[in-house]
Amino acid sequence: MYAIVDIETTGSHAQDNGITEIAIVLHDGEKVEGRFSTLVNPLVPIPPYVVSLTGITNAMVATAPLFKDVAANIHRLLEGRIFVAHNVNFDYSFIRYHLQAAGLYWQARKLCTLRLSRAAFPGIPKYGLGHICRTLDIPVNGRHRATGDADATTILLEKIIEKGGEKLIRDFLKKEAREQILPPNLPQEHVKNLPQTPGVYYFHDSKGSVIYVGKARCLRKRVISHFTGLDTGKKRQGFLREIHSISFKECPTELTASILESVEIKRLWPVYNVSQKHAEKLYGIYLFEDGRGYLRLAIDKKRKLLEPLVAFSVLSDANRYLWKLVKDFELDAVYCFLDRSVKESALTDTPDVYNARVQLAVLRMQEEKGTYAILETCEITKNISCILIEKGRFFGMGVLPDKSAAQEIELIRTHMTPYPENETLKSMLRSYSDKYPARVRQLGL
Image (cartoon, rainbow, N blue to C red; front, top):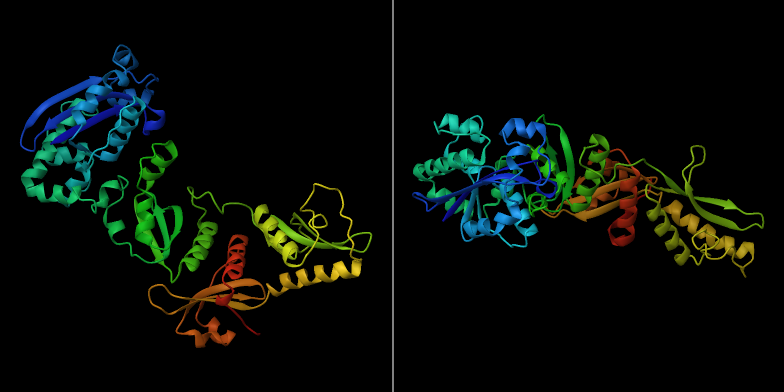
């Protein structure tokens, strides 16, 4: 019924590390049915700190079998059994990865005795294997060795079952018992308390510092999606181990969650966020007149002493925006420096005729610097979410009691929470306004 497993490894993630020892205890729910253990040659040097922790040296594994040589037997022992380990995702990810590398497909239901212990024996300060074994008087004959830890985990499982844990185990095995996929240091209550609403979530490390900020249309679903899958890469595994707590802020809509996410990334600069962590206002669209009297629009890096007509943080956004102006106002792509396949276009229009179209494009950009509100119906409360832009600058956002409150700008301001502007959210709001013009209400000052 159960395969209780412990492994020792050369490192913390499966993709770049090997297994140095494995022990499997077969258990039918009442008694031990059999045991298997072996050292394994990981084919990579064992780091000194791992040698110090486990006592397993390079000399000890030099003549041990390779994992591929024992993979078939391990697969046979595990097949059809519930996989049990303390901090189960660590052992499971290693064994599944290395079985797959040996050409063997394997997947199993999992039980984590660390999480089971939290439910069966509440109130213990720490639930690491060594600490809980000392608390429950479980002997460990060889800590940080696979056989000793697997035997201790077996006794721990038996104590959980004696505690009336059969129902607990059944509940954990249900698909909806999502806590089994959670990072090892994250209490399940932090996920259970997440609402199914739009918002922004924050992952915190052991010191409470924010290490990642994300946005979601459904907070609970999005947060759980971070923990699914079996990515064994070093970066992801390190990320999961650092998550100790979650906090969140609910938002009325997905758009307002996206805006708050951008603001918070710029404010907190979390170590695991990559996108949006770049310099602001890198590119702008500029207007100039050439020697023949033609007005030209061009993308260039933003200059300190020259204000662009519109600014972008990403070059591709600037290119897409200018291409749209070219199509909407029948401008020349070569004269806008978008088409470099030829050196110069032979414009048939006179400067006056062509420049009139350029001025219309400039007027479009200036109008986008107007004062307006983006109004959406809140997904949960059905109130009106409002994002206020004044003279082309993002002012803030909030919730209005109804659309009639969106008539006077002074009244709107009383419902708004101001936030700092950045180029990422400016591009976001510009794209959203283009996509949903019916949700934009122009306002007079």
